Image (cartoon, rainbow, N blue to C red; front, side):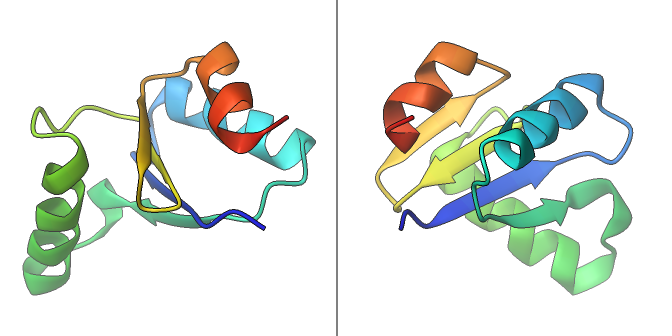
Length: 83
């Protein structure tokens, strides 16, 4: 099973589309809605995300701490998730 970390905004249409894609393919993931975080927790999560996506754009999906998919890229998600 792949380890999937999903950085998203609760109001982002592309994030919602990515979530629907992951859910439709029964992918287990950990999601952080960055816009709903505050203070030190938000700072910590943004620092983690910056490691993978210095531009801080959403959605950002990290797979197995090796691969990153920025934006909704269905083909790339299929590739890195082995779907």
